[in-house]
Length: 104
Image (tube, rainbow, N blue to C red; front, top):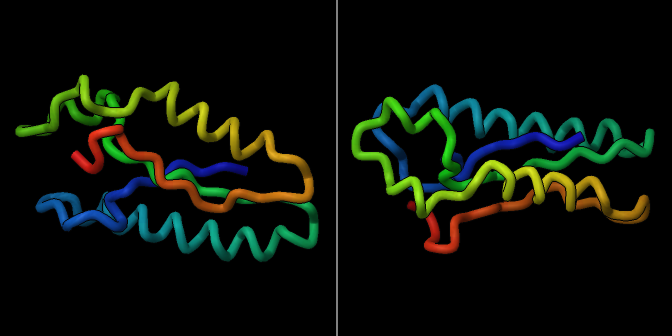
């Protein structure tokens, strides 16, 4: 099981994003507990903490970073596939995926 989080949980606080940031912290904590609970059953749990990704979320945000510098949604999906494709004797529980220019 893969979850998509955000680097908002570790980057400088963004004014106006309290609920969003809190939900990403919560998702990470939830996934860590779930990973431990499901490990004996052979279920792997991982979180992709994605940086700025070009989605409609940015449409309503004034001063958003340039969309062409953001990750594409298909790149986040590729990371999820990488996590899922690992053999049964390995698990990738947390991945930080950033645009090539770093946190935008």
